[in-house]
Length: 382
Image (cartoon, rainbow, N blue to C red; front, side, top):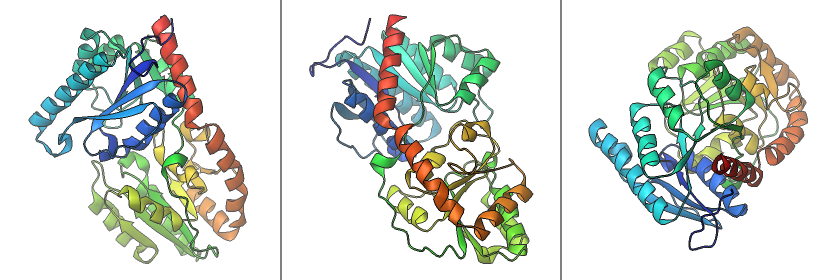
């Protein structure tokens, strides 16, 4: 059996339901996947929140069914979250969708209710699990097990995540490794504002969490400065359950105020390009990660990256070929790598050509759409 229930367009139909959308930058991912599916002959109804600016792609329709979700109290937000899913499921049934595709970063009681509702309304549920071990560590093991029992198919983004799920021994459903796509269709190409690379311009970009290791980077910057090398670090992003005063105090304590610029806020889409235009090297000093949108965004902008040597990064970055690596949580090694590149910035150009080829081929949304469509068919056959 294949995707075979046709809507009025004459195409097989699926429902892509993702409430965050334009509120937190998930709309790039959502529209990338929707575009890729549409190019593979699938009719996609994308159900999202009112913070999302609708985009137009063949065979893709945007439906706003989560309203004012992010400005409500906890209780009213919970009601709106469930109400939005119910509306999406009802519309998906009218569209004759066989599969609803959901996206989870953790497994909460409310997500369990969503999966129960999906099952009661007769859908097959495919879930992309973006972080297989939630960083807030508050996910209930029992809730997680119940959620996996209700899911018909699981998608993870890399082999590391698949291996981790196997170790947890919690998922018995069909599972596919399908990568997160690139951001090339959605971004404005950067205009290089400087070619001297003196000082070497470093960028830390994205949501600030403990697991992202900004403190390690600040310690490394202090060491590089002490050695007399010309560098400048720009930090752009909003804190998530993290105390910004801790980082401000560390910058002052390390006496690196003169070589660090901070912009601790959510960076609107239209401003992102400004950060990348003024960067020679993007640094991702993470302690833990399962998939990094910032890595793919940086490569999509054509910027070299220096990452901690975590397995998910190493599935994409080959040291000194498609980027650079340092020993995770080791500020001395990170400083040494920065010094090496500051002394020989031509190495940055050498990796850009290979990384550009990788990001355009291995992380192309049309290919990802084909893989996802094939997985849908596998679920329906099961």
